[in-house]
Image (cartoon, rainbow, N blue to C red; front, side, top):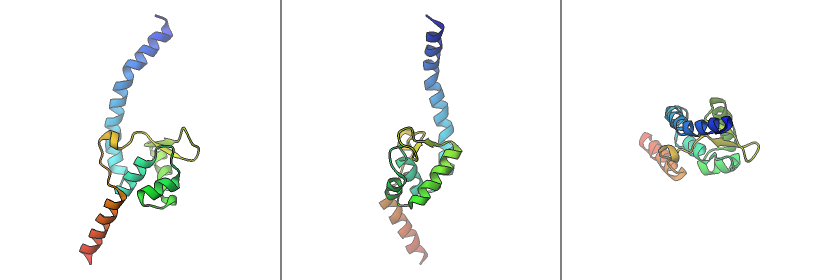
Length: 120
């Protein structure tokens, strides 16, 4: 086996372990940074293919909010600039793949309405 093949084999054997460690480190950061259901939904929709307007519409926030969130998330290292489309962001891992529940915009809106109703 050539040296390059040995290195490649070793890297392949380490990849699952690194992924496991990364996921364990990512979960608490996401729990702290993604402050509400709309932010969690925006993060989930940030797959590198959708525009800020598409993510904003899906998450029930403004496009400027999505752009600001993307900048924050990229700086924190929980998102990266899209590999497919310039000017878009891509999450490191989807929340659903991490076992983190995501409410829909309709659920978020109805919860907000109930909170307002109980305070009136």
